[in-house]
Image (tube, rainbow, N blue to C red):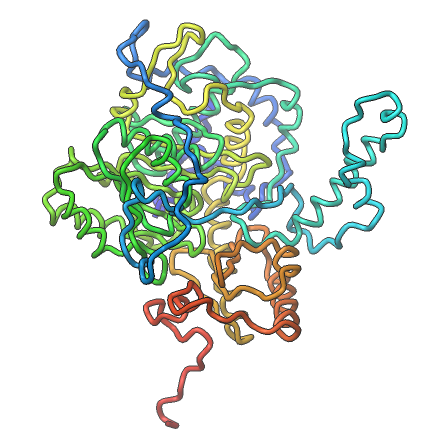
Length: 560
């Protein structure tokens, strides 16, 4: 796999650039632990200050003063009236393919808001706030004064922030339901928060705005391009605000390459994919899924066959939101091959928000890379790597990007990204995380997540709960607890009658033991969740296609 392939090549080079190539990242491997170490090489600060400027990069294909492309922003960002969403479905319609564009049903998986979590979550469970701190965070206390009298009576800001810090510590310590790695330490970067770092414009074409972090952004992009095996002359990418922006960009490129194409994605796809379809006024089809959460390949093939006259745009999930299911890319490519869909008639985007960062470090996992005929990959940066602010990375084939480029004289750069102004801090934080962790550090985190998820699944099953874990996943799916207070305490993400825990580096076995203990107490007091209907998510957890016996004991054949 990726991490093992380059281990032997590592120690020989000490590079002077900020590059994050496979070899240079590994040079920090001895210092890596499951979280980013706060111990810093004494020369690191000097090294950062004395880096040689990299030679100019010209990855964009735009020419100065090129006004060939004038995108219709109203068409791209047309307002959608969500109030018109159809609420009623016909009996048995759940397994039918929905024509998403004409139906306008809400396809995709809802993503409830998670509480914002800060560094320090892995040190044990912190008690809830005391009443005095709760009062300091009340609506009346945090109100911004609009008169001198209100200002005189206002709660001191320092006291409010101290109470808020206590709140975040408490919430961070029992954060189980959302895929955010809270084990990080970026103290060395705090000094840079005083600067307004803005990477506006294309990452590879410097604008007139001089306070940017492009050299770090390009290094991060190079790392992910290397990770996903695409040659330097063929890729383009940028650091995004989140995985959703990466999906919006990837689907935009697909729409520009195939204006009359149909977008196919599973019903368990993240909601941002179908949001993109609405924004771009694309025809889209929500394909039913197998019980484990993968797309139903036979139905996908059938739908493509029905619409052979139109190009194929496929979103491949590298880990679905609720079940962590990974669509089989090779099988999807075989479907296209068997239907004789030529390469120029299909476009594949991979939504790898969490697991595309983990997959290359899982031994014997299938390869998802640009060695195969895919066109873009999007990943979140704040999930597996950990970052105090949402961010992500998208990588695409450079040939597609020219279809959305516009020269902007005001910037002295080109417009190729979804956002105009772009947070330059996130590129710096991602660069720092990758440098400090190294490949061996990321590998260690991935192994921890996968093994700890198996531990959680085993503990839940032995306690008599229905629990499932996909092979390529650290997301444990279980029956929804009956007590909403328990759900809110552990910040579980729920969908109908199931919930899930996403095991990240900050989740330890001791925390899992406490979680299972409290879950048993919850069951004893409130009972267990019953399936909402015959085809509900909870009933699908019992399907034999998952393998195993859920909570049923394995019989001893000899004694029976």
